[in-house]
Image (tube, rainbow, N blue to C red; front, side, top):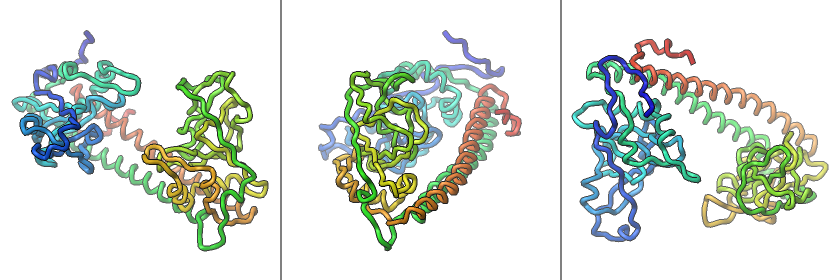
Length: 422
């Protein structure tokens, strides 16, 4: 048994199951959903239970027997904890504040109802969200894609219980410190959103389609090449192996060569090898990213196009960087999204024929190069600000961890700066 970390005199460790009633939620019974005799009630899923907040912007409903509603109905002060998902989501949660009446929770969300006010709910939630991460990672079970933790195991989670007076002090200090840190995080988040909007505005101003003359993408190309399908799954290729790129290599506006899977050399056709300077497009992706273009910079060798990727070959008088940005512009993205087909947003497709018909602004070669250079300079400025915002976010998150760890070791004081050695 792993020894528990030291806690101050007067504190005690207790298993979660001894200080709280911990229960799992309801499993959806498809057959019962068409029975009008059963109550229709809101229920929380994993997506609603975030780290440090309950998101009620989109809450599903479910039909369950009245007895189930009575048994699982949430009460203010209940602590909700995620049972499964990605490994870093185990134990993620927050305190229910009664935002929606008659609300219950699904089976992938645990509810801990603290007995006899032995511990303030927020102190439990803060502890599970940060200080107990290592415990959840150690005791969670991992399948191929998901992690989970059993009800019997989570009841064994060791929880530090301070004396009542100390709980009040900690609650006041943490609410003060964390609210200030949350304010900084919100500022960083708003900055990132504004930068994304600025980037879209720049793309639209320099590469967007206007009322002036336009030209079809196909008229700017000498050819287009599709990759090939290689089934199965495999880890990424090592340096001397051949790999075939995945959709995720072309999703985020930059080419990510590490997003590939290794293939046997017997299946390799070197005609499909990706080279620096290639302009690639994702033929199949989510509705948001189908048709997303990337311009390949310096990259490793022995990477092949997949059947979900296309290589665009511009005419000699077409600047590849200008064409890349023109395909990123909002006017082009709207056309591509409208032309994509598929019954599910999770995987849409666009044919070569429809892609070749996308209208782009008609721009002379010299102007193409000037626009591409001007945008690159502006984009460099935006990326610098983005890096600063990301750095600020990481520092605040590190300080938040330090504050919470100090709180549960009895070292928290009223000067947040003294916990900033991160």
